[in-house]
Structure formats: structure tokens, C-alpha cells
Image 1 (cartoon, rainbow, N blue to C red):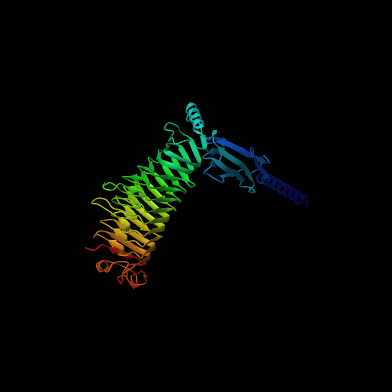
Image 2: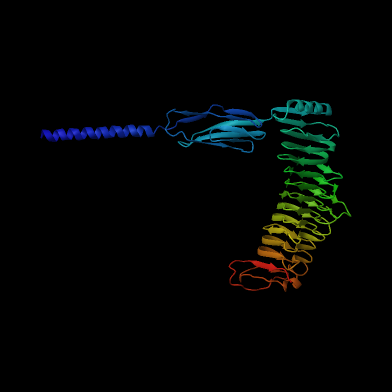
Length: 471
């Protein structure tokens, strides 16, 4: 009996020790977070600087202290996962940190501003500001806001960086604006003579009721990785050999969101006169909206001319009523690409989209949406150039919707609609010489609604048309 009691006591002690050890172990795992805070609730940073935020977690011995950092607007400031905040552009953002345990969050309202702010209302004040900037150097950030008339002088800061210039007011500036590397100029409600955007992170933004007109060179020249953003306004009645309205080259980018480019001209009688409205050479043009109309080029690309490994992306807007000998609307050549997702190319007296090619180069057109209509001809594919169409409408063009000019031209049609105005979407003389494959359920129509060459190829498993140029 004594042995049984002794055995029971030993067993009880062992159980109690195990339970005690287990409870200690559990206690070390579950110390939850009750709150989180930051050492600062508000933070002001000068453009281009950085500061580290510190976390305060309660209780201090919380088990899981893992957190995630974020910024509500990463264009203004970003934050690393150790709390370092870097100021990128003027404005306000909220830096947040959240715990993985309990999902507690703390915020810091962060404002990014310039180191020096100036308001200028006349030419004398402008000269004083420029002298101050020259004396203090490029390692500062400057914001100059012009609210009055600074006269007709041109504005150039050739040797200065980190400058943002805002020009506001209803006044004329018959001189030009020059934007250089790491400079940003914003002009609003200004009548301007011309603009030149040059160098990395050189940005020119046009907004309000601004205009650039009557210049004997391109209205805006963008090159060497500069960027021109057109939010509104008018570029009109300018003259140049290449790109009467806007000339983009050498890695430059033109982003058009709204506004009008009209009545610009490339010089008559000169063979190199191309791109009445916009000329892009080894650059990028992205069109979200706006109107390119009534521009005139002596040779190619009355509306838009794209050449030498350039890209044109059309997400909206209208290209209409431009004039030239070839490719009145859009002219693509020399290994360049045109992507059309939305928008309208219409009412040209010659060709809506012309894809040109030589012996060793070609052009590419991808149409996924938008409308090409009311032109003399819709799309012409020349030489070894190629086009693919998976959406959108090519309709109501007087002669034909698609023309493949040579035997090695290529057109792949897998969606969208092609139909004609007077006779057919694909001209009858051309259709009779096409090599075409399509599934039985393909529904593409042309002209009077009959199928385009109703030919069945069982090896094709999708609705697709492959059209090759005639011999």
C-alpha cells in the first residue's frame, strides 16, 4: 500500500512539473501587442531628403513585433521596411505602419516641400531669384511661382538642377522656355513662343488655357530622355521641317491627355518635311485624349509621323482631317510600332494609317480597339510591314478598309469589324487574290454583309483571318 501511495505521489509531482513547464512555455509565446505608435505624427521633408521614423510598441516584451510599412502616395514619398522615408515630389502623403499581431496601425502625415519657395511678379524679382539660385548651387530644391508678367524674355536655367517653375497668369511670353536635366516647368494660362525639353528627368507640363503658336520652329522639341506632358491648351500654326507641332527624338517622351494640336505645317517643297502635327524619331508618344487636326505635311504623316524604332500608343483622342501626300492620319516606318486601344482616326483625304517599309525595315500595327473611318482608305500595309487586328472598327472608308500593297505584306484578323462604305471593306479585286484561313463560325463581314472568302481550315481552332498580299 505504501508503495502505491509513493508511486502516486511521484506521478503527481511529475505531472505538476510538466504542467508548470508547459505554462511557462506558453506564457513566453503569447505576449500580445496592445498598441503601436510612431515617434512623429507629422513630418515635413525637403524634396530629395529622407528621415527615419521610430516605432513604439506596447508592451515592450510583445512576442511578435513584425510590422509592415506603406505610403498612401508613393509618387510623393516612399518608405522602406525599416521606416526610412524618402521625399520624391511636392505634396502630402500618409506613412503607415501596421503590426502583424493584432493589426494595429499608426500614421504619420508627411508633407514634402521645396527648400526654397519664391513668388515672382515682375522681371526684377525674377532676376533676383535667379542670382540667388546661382549663388546657392544645385544641391538645393527650388520652387519659383510666377504670378505676374515677367516680360517677353526667354526662361532658361542651363546650369541649374532641382528647379520647379510654376508660371501662372494670363500674360504673353513671346520668348521660349528651356527645360534641362532635373528641372520641371509647369505653365498655366500662358501664351508661349516655343519650348525645348532636354535631358534626364527634364519635364515640361502644359495646362490651363495655354498656347504655343506662330513659331518658325517646332512648337515643342523633346529630346535626350526629356518628357512633355500636355494636359490641355493649344499648339497651333507652327512651322518646321520635322514635326510642326511637337518634335520628339532621342529617347524623348510625349504624353497627351487633352488639348489640341492643329494647323501646324512642315515646310512645303522640302522632301524631309514630315509629321505636320507630331513627329517621333527614336522616342515615344502616348495619346490618352485630345485632338490632332488640320495639320499639313509636305510628304508623310500629316497628323502623326513615327520613325526609327519609335512607339506610338493610342488610348483615346481623335486624329482627324490632317493632310499630306501619304498617310494623312498616322504614318509608321523604320521598325516602329503603333498600338491602338481606343480613339478615332477619321476624315482624311488620303489614308488613315500607312505602314511603310524599305528593303531592310518594316512597320507594325496592332489594333485592339478604336475606330478608323471616313478616310479615303483605312489602312495600307506596304512592303514587308504587318498588322494585327483583334478589336475595334474599320468602317466607312471610301475605297477600302485594308489594303495590302505587296506580296510580303501581312494582316492577321482575329476580331473586330471591317466593312466598307461604297462597296466592300476589303476590295473585291484584292479579296480574290487572298490566301485566307478561318473557322466555320467566324463572323467577320465586309461590304454587303457576305462572308469574306468563306473558306474552312479545320486546323485553325479559333476565329482568325490570315490575309497575305497578292502576287
